[in-house]
Length: 78
Length: 265
Image (cartoon, rainbow over all chains, first blue to last red; front, side, top):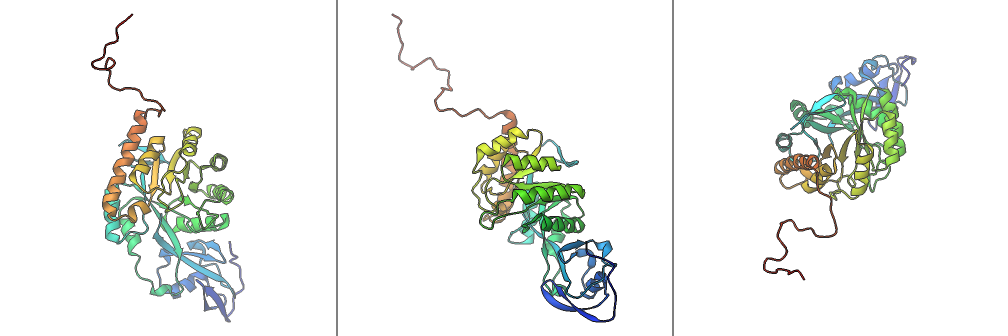
């Protein structure tokens, strides 16, 4: 599980979001970052650096420079 | 149809249906209805970077509305670590402990990687999942999966999407014999309804398929056809299929040739 005790600051950081570089505030939580995307946070699952982050832990996980954030959604499947 | 239980869930249909590759949501909906399937498989995928532009997930809404049990898969995973992470996401998205565990080791055959599969199953059972592992007919790997806590095994008939049908009947029959109390599902490689019937005649408890219905010319009719033969195959298994033999045995109880009487002496 990614650490939730990360240092917060006002600096801008760069994270990787689903393969694309994006800006985030240092110390911004994963929940805040997802909210800014404008999608229903209950309709997607999240991972940071390839580790699952449960919905109830998004608020306490603070993003860091270089973090790889991925979001997932249901699809049809066999 | 009689009922049976899988991980404590009561079911009556032995037809598990995949939801991918249908021409339209409406046809999928009709195919589900025609199948009578109570278990539907689904997947999860990483979203595009421009997630805000993504539209409403029409397929998932439709499938959810059917009220069927969802069996999410871990398609695309190559390692136990990936599969465990994806399974946890699936549990959150679909609100179920069921997981169809797929960990493949080869792009050409999409053959399950038994080593990673067992490692993932051990972890997932520890995390409270009900694991449905997609596996080969390898009896040792199967035993390891059972030892890990799997109450269901899902061996392939043939490579995913190949439509070849059961390529190793004897191995599947041996698996049925060895794990006689376990819930066994033939998963992958089914192309024609006769393939599904064969699996059920061997004694498998259910059949899971997707492409054979979704890629057919008329998915709704094909779904109905599979539904009928899966039930027929089950009935045949219970009734007892006669063993094959290399020589003929007359079925009509005639007295020799009609006009030829063998005289004694």
